[in-house]
Amino acid sequence: MRKTNKRWTVVFLIFLATSINYLDRANLGIAGPDMMKDLGLSKTAFGLLGSAFFWTYALMQIPVGTIVDKLGPRLTYGIAVIWWSIASALTATGRSIGLLIGIRALMGIGESPAFPTNTRVIADWLPSKERGLANGIFTMGIAVGAGLTTPLVAWIVQTFGWRASFIFTGALGVAWALCWFISFKNKPSADTKVNKAELEYILDGQVENGKEVVAAPRLKWYQLLKYRNVWGILFGLFAQDYLLYLMLTWLPTYLVIERHMTLLKAGFNSMIPWIAASIGAVLGGYLSDRLIKKGWNPIASRKTIMITGMILSLAIIPAAFVTSATMALTFIAVSLGGMMFANGGSWAVVADIAPKNMVGVLAGMQNFVGNISGWIAPILTGFLADQLHSFIAALVVAGAIGALAVILYIVLLKNEKIETTLHLNTGGMRNEKLS
Image (cartoon, rainbow, N blue to C red; front, top):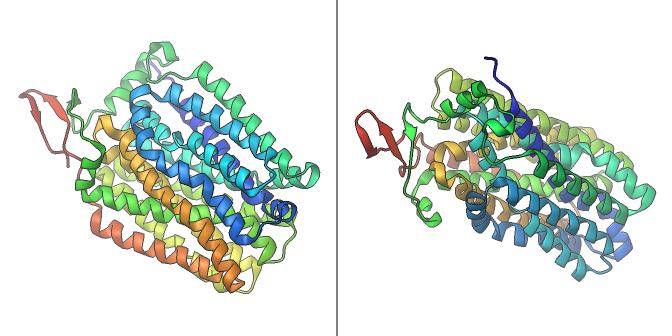
């Protein structure tokens, strides 16, 4: 029997959700110049507004991972997308910095389940050897939402005003949520349009080391901090997100202020780094899966991709110093492409490291630490740009953080799965370390 491909329809759905998620976030950066002029905001104040989203978004990550694992992705994601879409639309009502900060904080709560839920869905719907590509596809949504839609949003801002752009992005999210509730189930089964051949393929690919995973003791989230692998991936995502959120909040505004482009020209030129990021996301996921199919340990394959990508991300440093806008965009494109090359591996490795019943929890912990960078990067970038009248120092800081991530990946990330799972084999049931 030829197997169906329902699992890839599910991956496409979470790719769309991620694209809308980052379109909502990027909208602020695109509308930034007009908002700053309309509301009289300094660069530092605008950086504070960009950071407000991450105050609640990051703080919600640890509890939301547990919520995803308990309630399941269908209910969690549907409610979350409707919540953040309404908050996005409410941004259009903002008349003061205080009100806008409150709305962005509410939006952060709504978006908090996205990545832990994506990780949970892929762990449930994909065999291990396809998770790298699947994670690469959904993380490509970051680049699509943050960059490839920039000209459209810039056109809406210039034609209808910055407030209309937030109403537009909010409406997209509500439409997606309706599709999600209609078409998605938490686990693959016969009533999800998955035939027997595909169901067997998925379940066989989720058996670890030839043993069927059965009931397992559950750790407290903080007990995961005993493992050095966890510390490696936590800081690694912090470094990736620092560069990501710097660019997400500031790239179009940077091109307008530092490189003297019009908003519409900046919108089109902003696409270039995000196209590179899209390619990097899918290529990194695909290559990590290829290495596994060739016999590599899953963690080793993800680690190789993550280190390579973060080395490429260091191109943000020369981007700070070149005088040519074209060369600056080229280096930024290499940097974002490298970061996204690593990013897919960073999410895929969570399912390789975490116990089966704690994938959402570890994903939430990783996203919490990663998004602390969202508190820092927008504000620090605006502060440095205000004080030094240049973005050079802000870009160098992002490169230095990326360099530290390379070192920590090499030192801390080992081929060891966390030991909490019981396995069923011919010898009966027993605890066993996975490596």
